[in-house]
Length: 254
Image 1 (cartoon, rainbow, N blue to C red):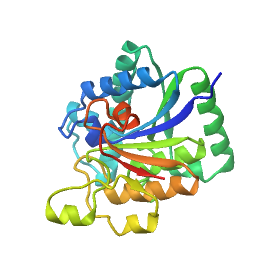
Image 2: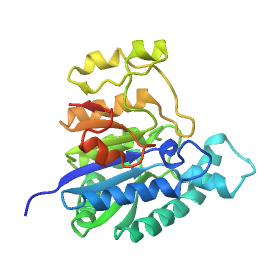
Image 3: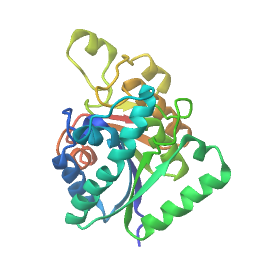
Image 4: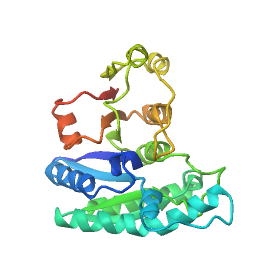
């Protein structure tokens, strides 16, 4: 049997909500259909944001603590709902899912790293798609990833992924000049990482806590592990399949 290509897909809140205030079931359906289409040649591990965005649809919390505590409480409320939505929609596409919550400290301890690898390998070999998020409820300001781009990159490196796909709300990384001119032009292939750093225009995403800077930092992590990174527009339908077939502009960091 041919070995499947291991893909770590990181999907942020902006993609999951399609830049609205609600999680888009249609976007999760789109992801499920693509994974079902690619499953003969690829195995998937997903790092998904969205717990806080889901919770905000249901509740408005009274703030009796710092902003970080409110976010942690929202994550605690939203995470089970997020996983339920994934389970329901992926099941309709004939896909099985599981939940894994990780903290930054898990990557610092050898025993934890070993456990993560062993558990996820068992899940994947039994056709379960692990859906990973940061364990926001216990993470504090100091040990938070800040966004799931870095979590995705660390996980891809640990699990020896063949490809790291970051689904975002742009057609990859744009050249600095084109951004300043207001006519965004995608940098399609990056061979020289140092040159890429000069092109980054600082920006935060509206729902997430990342932005293009954090995606570059994530790509630096996977580059060290010799993993290719693709930055793709996840708002578009069929974004992964189209990227594989080179039908859309996106950034490929060799």
